[in-house]
Amino acid sequence: MRRQFPLALCFIAGLFMAVQYFIPHPTVQDMYERLLIWLQTLLAFAFLLGTVSLVRVHYHKIRHRADDRGYSLVTLLALCLMIGLGFFHSAHHAQGSPFDRMFQNVQVPIEATMFSLLAFYVASAAFRAFRARTLESTLLLVAACIVMLGRVPIGDMIHSSIPVATRWILEVPNLAAKRGIMIGVGLGMMATSLKIILGIERAWMGGGD
Amino acid sequence: MLGDRGQSGGIRPWTGFVALSVAVAALFLCPVAVSAQEEVEAVEQDTLLLVAAPTGLSAIDTPNDRGSSINVTWELSSDDNGDGIVAGYEVFRSAHPETGFAFVGRVPFGVTEYRDSSVDNRAPTYYRVAALGADESPFFSGTFGPVEASIQWFNRSRLNALVAVIIFVVSILYFVNAAKSGKKLFIRRLAGLDEMDNAVGRATEMGKPILFISGLSSVSDVATIAAINILGEVAKKTAEYNTKLIVPCADPIVMAVEQEVVKEAYAKAGRPDAYNEDDVFYLTRSQFAYVAGVNGIMVRQRPATILYMGMFYAESLVLAETGSSIGAIQIAGTDAVTQLPFFITSCDYTLIGEELYAASAYLSREPILLGGLKGQDMFKLITVVFLVVGVIAATLTATGVIESNFMLAVFATG
Image 1 (cartoon, each protein chain N blue to C red):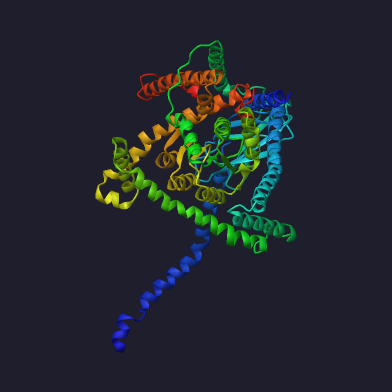
Image 2 (cartoon, rainbow over the protein chains, first blue to last red):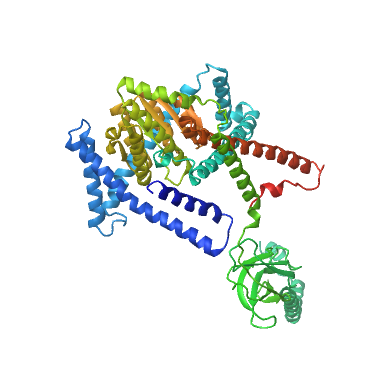
């Protein structure tokens, strides 16, 4: 029963979701919309699970005096502070409230800093990718140089055919490859969904039979 | 000086007389001229107000919908040339052909259709459309009706999709049954998945953990489910080798599912005691906070192997480059086309697109799952055949060899 119930539930829900695509009748569509609302509600409750997990993991680290317990302490303090500001300042969404100030002046700049690291990582990854050791990487290097030049005014100044070649690379071989991958992805998604609905694929239940 | 002034700037007596005569004539003629101008303007205004009514009014029940909707179409007023003579069209509805027409909606000039989405189902309805003049005065068409809105049980414009799904299901079930009956199925090698055993073995030998990242998407994303399937197989191996497996999650539902999957895998491998719930934990939902957290784990715990499976966004390169900097073996798999180049650059092996979905079957080598893969390949072959025929048909239509593209109905869905 422990195995059959989730499988049956998955089959019914999966089949309904597949069938509703073909049935415009309001009874079916209303049920579909209701299920989506349930999903949102479930997600809201699931955040409680996440918070419990976060607190438990970091509490254990502090309790067992793990090497990186300092970070855990900061995490828990920050969590308590933000929850406190959210609860005890009723207008916590208002602009200029302590909650908003903490979010805008701490969280946002830190996230922006992490995001900006991407520029440096792109440079280091490009350096590694563009080393012309094989035929493929040489082709990649040549294509990348043409595309980069074609996207800036200097490319057109060097030769008017560079932007044309850039467009061709992006719109013909690049787009063809992307579409090929996307068709495969679409079929893979369908096959995976079908295998799960039919109970063929059970790894999501821990691989149990 | 005075004589000069008298000749050049002074008013001569005969000039004064002419000016006086013109002024007197103007006094008499002016009222006549003004009244004539008003008359012309009035005639022009009358011409503007008269607008030809729209013709060819028609109304049908909106096809393939959930009812309560009727599509009204008409032909443009002959005065609707986009020059402002027609300001727009108003649609009116009534339950009777002669009386009780009520306004239901308005569209700008040049538009010839309106969808009335507030109709009672199975109620006879009549329509009229009015072309509006520049001063908003209506010029009505004839009445059209009765027409009834009705609920449809099947969206016929998606028939081709249904046929495709049925072929797909039959194809998969056929190969699954073939696999069940013991037929040998060939699956091409996937280097990234072949390397999985070595990657786990390497971590075991080095006494370092394995980091599994299942992307930032939710459990409703099929890529995340595929990642969870792979996690189950990886967890079995880590349980066998007694290697620590760290799984930081960005979604609480994904975390709950992954905890169960890893727990079950450890139990199945006969090592339920080795499972530690704290190793599969929630980090954060925030994209770059998650990156900071995972990068911190990488730098502090220095995992020997890092697996990126699932849906990734801009964080992919930051994660993969940090993993590369600590010398970990990295295997990635994603269906995010825009992130694939980053993973290919920074990781040792990358599963591209559909290979992610094949990974679970490939790793487990279960015949039934492999049968599913073959069924998928067969459907892909059918799709390729249809695409080739479609391209040929489109080319022949474009070059005028054939009149209409017979493949359009196959590819178009509503």
